[in-house]
Amino acid sequence: MVKGRMSRACGFTYLTALFVVAILAGGLALAGTVWEQAAAREREAELLFVGHQYRRAIGLYYDSTPGTVKRYPRALEDLLKDPRQPATQRYLRKLYPDPLGGKEWGVVKGSDGGVAGVYSLSEAKPIKVSGFKVRDAAFEGAGMYADWKFMHTPAGAAPGTKPAAGAAPVVAPGAAPIAVPPGAPPAIPPAADGAPAPEGGDH
Image 1 (spheres, rainbow, N blue to C red):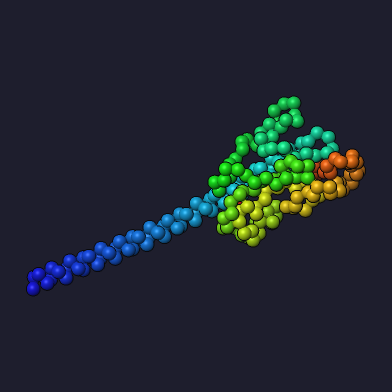
Image 2 (cartoon, rainbow, N blue to C red; image 1 turned 30 degrees about the horizontal axis):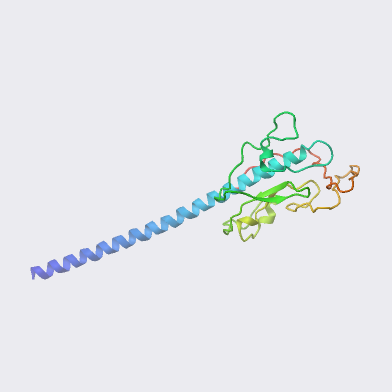
């Protein structure tokens, strides 16, 4: 009798231990999933912030072009020190890496062959698919992060569009048309209200 009771007690203890281990394993798995999703959201928010910093810096470089024919930077490094200016002129504090882990940014070419925007090379599906600000309306329903193009849009162009090579120059209302020499890239004047204001990140 005693032996039978001990056997049943041991069996009950063993089952209880297995039950506790299963609960702990399930809890750890759930916690891991929640943590991973939270980390992904944080990287996504960082991508939006950093992307807007590049967009703003490219816009400042573009609008600061001497003369009437505006130019995009030849490389991202030009945002750290404008080679066109006699004194050091910075539009970006540093070259931010892609928060999604990419070694390089994808580059959107402007009508003059310069850098008009950047984008992550990640093909992962975004968590945020709606509720974007007007400046990011083109991100709605994107299938992957690589579809998020952080581009500077010259005044008069539709938001999120790339100036087409050979397109007619965009002239601000009330301004005189700008003559474009044959073979020269289209001239796009800066925004009427000056340099763009700093942009914060989406959260």
